[in-house]
Image: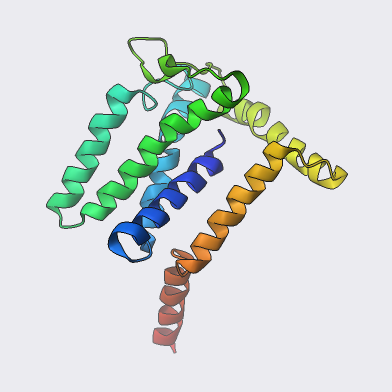
Length: 197
């Protein structure tokens, strides 16, 4: 799963949970933390594997043996500072990343490859390389190019329609939530300009 799709799943979960349990929209800080948590395993493992040849692309931060303790630590630390929702936002994004990586293979083969989450008991998964930029170009650029080509050709598969529907749902939720991050960024900028005058 691509990083932005992890972020989308994290935001949907945060928004729906926030509305269901707290009857409020997610804050900017919660939004930033759920997105950061959702991409955190890739931010750790991909550079370690692709640039430095350490481990594999889905090992250290993709392991349940790291993810669960780190998520609990984030919740405890945030709770001690009086902001448990911030810790929960990071933990939710992070923990949703793990099954998110299993989903594409499951949809293709019908099998759950749980061994990819059990590093160091298993070898995890994902390859090693010697250049982050080269691996990014090999993994991400063709994905984006294929989506663009399908759109331009009008060849929208069920999988692509599902992906666009997911993005549309996320955008709609984000707008309904008052556009966190953008809203606060605009307010900050407007306030900064007003103080300069």
